[in-house]
Structures are given as C-alpha cells and as structure tokens.
Image (cartoon, rainbow, N blue to C red; front, side):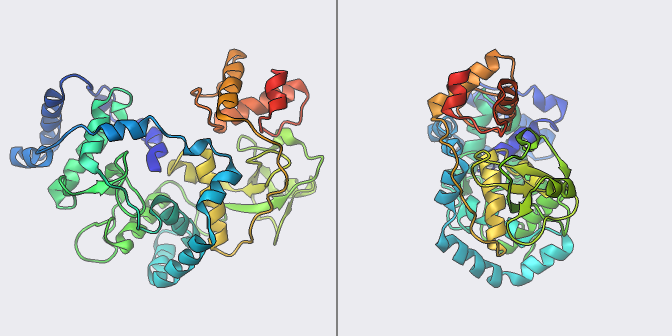
Length: 388
C-alpha cells in the first residue's frame, strides 16, 4: 500500500534518472540496467548475479492497473480493515514488543500507535507480506513506460542492497509495487532508513520485527514527525460551523476552533494549530488533525488510507470507537468520474479523472460548493453533481 509514497520520491530524483529509458526490447533494457548498477559500484559478477533469471511479470502490470481499494468511502474502508481481532492483536503486539516501542519512542519520538497501525494495515503484523518477486516487479514497472522515473531508482537500490548481502533477487518476495517486509518499505527507503534493530548485523525487514519497526520509525521521523505531539482526535462540530474553513487546506489555532463551537469528543483539544477534517462531510464523522497527520502522507498519499491509519492508531492507543453520525450518500465511482470531469471543465484542478475522492478533488468540490452557495464541506453528493 505504500505505492503513494513513490510520487513524493519523484520530486527528489537526480536529473539523469528523471530521463530514464523504458520500453523496447526487454533484454536490451536489462543490459542498460546492468551498466547503471555497475556505475554505482557493483562488480560485473554482482550485476550478472542480481539480474540472472529476471523476467517481466504480467501480474504486476495487472495489479498496477487495477487499484480500486481507495475508491471506498472512509467509513467503508475503515470498517473493512479495523476489526476487533486486529485491535486485540495490536494490543498483544504492543505488549510483546514493548521494549522495542520504548526504544523507538526514546530514539525517534514516533508513537507506537502509528507504527502498530501501519504494521497492521500493510501486512497484518507481518503475516501477509506479498508473493511477488521484488526484483522482477521493480524491473517490470521500470520497463513499463507509465512511471519508469519512479521505479528505475528502486531497481538500482535493490541491487545495492544485494551487494550488501541484504537482498536475495531470486527469493525476495513482497508487494506488487516492490515494497519489502513487515512495514512494506521500498529499496531506496531501506538504504536510507534501514536499522539493524536486533543487532544481528543485517537489516532484515521480512523476518525481524525489531528491524522493521525501527526502520519504519526512522523513516517517519525523517519525514518530519514531531515527538510528543498528537496527530488526530475525534471532535464534535456545531451545525452552523463555517464549513468553508474546514479541510486540510485550512488551518487555525485550536483555541479559535473552540471559540467556534468545536469540541473534543473526549478530553480537550490540543494546543496549537489544527484542521477540521470531515472525511464524509458535515454530517459524518469529524476529526481535528494536527501537523503530524500531514506527515503521514509521505508514507501513503491516499486520503482514505491515511485517515484510516491515523484513526486506527488512536484506537490502538485507547480512543473510543468513532461516532459515524449520518453522512449524506456519496457518489458511485462513475458518478465521481463524471463530477471530476465537470470540475475540470470549470478550471478546477482535480488531478487524474480516476473516481477517487482525493485531496485535490475535495478542494475543488469545496470551491464549487461555496460558489453555488451550498455548505462547503468538500463532500460531493448527487445533489451537487446535478447542480453542476
């Protein structure tokens, strides 16, 4: 599920990789990759060994073109991945690895709830890590001309891990987009943030929970996580809140939100800056989110995934089950695509026409709602689609 993080990687790639070759004869393409890994310091013997037996995997391309899980609404998605069993398992894992989580808190300041949530959502606490050959998946996606600039650097990074003795190209299995291990990290992430948490001299994110959790924590800390600060809490909102001020594109001091009638459902609002998040509009569940919440989009760029992971993390740390309230009916995938086309025709930036209610589409919806004099809560409804 960490594929969304690849987009942010694109912005930091060195210039030569941004013009990476793709397509054409697969054998010739692999020859070019061999030359590139040798330029990175691998010997000819190592390069030959890494690419020996490499093949294109049509199942990878099929999976790449069939991503639909994030078209679900927040309530539907969270209900499908947060269960009583997962909460109970999370509590057991928290106790079992208590010393590791305490070490993480001291060294990186990352909440155990966040790590437990990602661990659960990515691989069900390490139980389902994927069955795609990682090298073949990465080379297949690098050869495919949709996003070679995103995947070619991951092939090179995997080769560097192989040279270190931390990657077996013939046997390393993971997710279809090349993520590896219990918290599903990409090869470049492992090179930058891999931690030998159990002290055995290797970074093994597949077999070592200590390595996986420490590495994930280091990566999140490097994204800008603020130690000791919250990321999300459930709130209640007044019926006449200025909805145009809600959403991730609007931030106010929590004292100002409180003056407008926003209250924490339990406890008190944290001091500082926050945004009112209404994942399913003004009649659905409501959250106050803080700067740490935004950091999570560097892990995965899906709005529904990040919101679910953040909420799950609060549950794992003792928060009560959310109040779903009674959101207005949303749109089907085809209706959402029709809405995105209408918004784009009006000059709104919605990103790709994909039927997914991402942050750009939410902002465009909110702007059109305000223009039409509707409650600007960024939740698209059939009524809005008809008005447009």
